[in-house]
Length: 306
Image 1: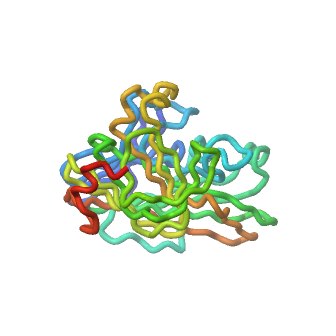
Image 2: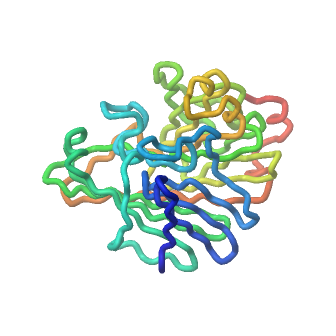
Image 3: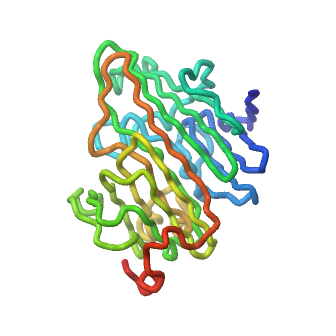
């Protein structure tokens, strides 16, 4: 399948994927970053900061950046690692992944450079397949060790979701789980609420999470379902008002219309021996409903089970 690459002057080349029913996604070669995902009704499902810097070498705040080989500051490298600050290439040999039937897709690859070896002394190949289907977006990251020694890494797909009003949104699927609270010196707690709702800053790493998590947006009568494999943790983040004003590339009011829910492997780093490969998978899909699981009492949620 021919790949449609669009060049916009000094901005990163981008790839536009469109499937027959009208869903689209855009992927930048810089960072291998998905920056847009629209459903069949042309509604944008991903958040993009009103102050996003769209020219390299700054990463773009929004869409779905890839954090590799380190998530956040869980290590000695720069925040969220360097993969989101590198220029990726089209992958001419994505095998052994099979072709994606009835989906528009692109395969990208990032290979370690001599510059990277100065900051992280391991040779690797990071591959990403992006597929868009009818109201569905699938991402398959793969990491191969092409060095002669083992290495360990953490990884996350940082999903910036566009929401109507974060204070009216809830997340299902993480109840009763343990989490690290990054606002409280990474102390470990257990989630007590029946669903996660939002009335202030949140920055948590939920541990050993299920394969399916839902973001329920009542006002838009829409649920985004995240299904994941190979990434057992999940990060929930919103900076809220004070922190938003301190973030240079985020508008003061942007926090109201965004929510980050990441598929991640953080608590237990992934270790690869020479020639070994790790594969993850994330599938985002849309359910046109304001109520997802039917397991909760809506009145309890409306009455502020926070």
